[in-house]
Each structure stands twice: as structure tokens, then as C-alpha cells.
Length: 258
Image (cartoon, rainbow, N blue to C red; front, side, top):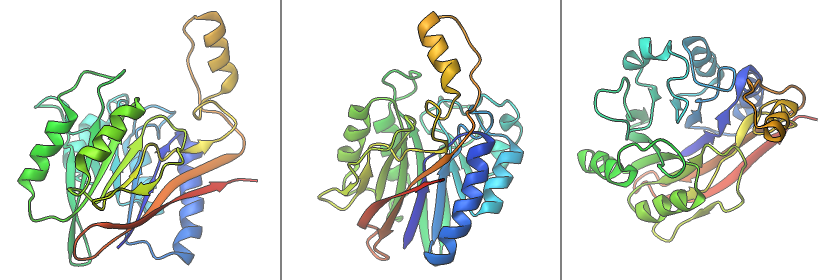
């Protein structure tokens, strides 16, 4: 089973580049499942219906989120109706939406979990115990993919080691800068600390660099906007054993616009 996981999609520029790159990848690579983090898809903050539909049309099958989940209030109107969109599972009970979904890939069930770290982010419920509870409720599913949306590399690494051998992959998102530590952990879990992002590469984490630098210099509030110019596409491709769900390999898929 070949799975493509796409890093944080930033703005309309990121949405457009996902369409372009997936069209090329799909023509030369067999992809059984495509998952993407879409929490920055609308102006760099949140997700709405139009952006979600555009990503589905491009080939994305599951959309994960993060700390900007509800920055677009429109999402609250339909997230409960769309099982393909999942927000961090460790939000408090009663929060709209769900933190995991189960999809079919051929005859196999795949459990996709979205969880958010707590270091330097919102103090949500314990991410480790919340994932434990989801796994305990789905003991029959061997193919499990976890999007660990977190600021601290230590917290992402901790989740990777904590789940090694119990899930198929732990993939870090949020910091938008791809790390070079992709590997299959000893018990068969594919891991990377951060997948990266899709969108402008000459900005700062996808945002207009002049605005960001100005804010850092002045320490005054400023409204960020998505940068323009050449784009980048960061993703990871990993193969899962059909029977055991263990990862066979994982590799980065960087694509840069000239």
C-alpha cells in the first residue's frame, strides 16, 4: 500500500500547486491513499468548504488539521458532516468534528488520526493518552497513520517512539520546514519530525517575508498575508505491508517550481 502524505498546504497558492503536482505524481506513481494537512489552506489560516472541495478534486482523500482548525468559522457548519476532515483528537469533548476517521483502501481499513502537541501550543488533553484510547477502540485495524501536529521536535519524537510498532506511521506537521530524519523505526513505524509545507518558498513559512520581518523588528501587530512567487511541494511517500500494516520504507518527495 503506497501512501502519500502532504505537508501543511498554505493559501490559494498551495492549493493550486497541490493540483499541479498531484497531476504529475499520479501519472507516474501508484498512490493508494493521499492524505494532506489543510489547516493553512485559506489565507494561511484554517479551512473552508471551497478549499476542501478543491483538494478533493485534486486527489486528496483525507484532510488533517491543527491549531488553526477553527480560524475559518465556516468549518463548524460542515465538519460534522464530512468524515474526510479530521481535527486534533485531543480537543475537549463537545468540540465539533472528529479526531480520526476510518477509510477503505482496497479491502483494507486504514485508521487516520490527527493529534496536536501541547508544548508552546494550546493546552489540550494529553495527546499520548488520547491516541491510546483511539487505538484501543480499533484493535482490528493494522494500518494506522498519525499526523502529529506539534511545535516541539522533542514532543514529535516522543510520539514516534511511543507509538513505534503500534501504528504504521507518525508524521510531524506544523513547523513548515521539512526535516531530514525520515526513517522506519525498529518496530516498523515510519517516522519524520516534519513533512514541510506546500506553497510559496520565498516567504517565511509561506507568509510574506517583509511583513514578518517588520513585525519582528517593530514588535507591533501586523496582519500576515500569503507570499507570492515560486512554490514548493513537500510530502512523504511510504509503503505499508498489506498484511501487517508495518512500514516498508519512507522517503521525502520535494518538488520545487523553477
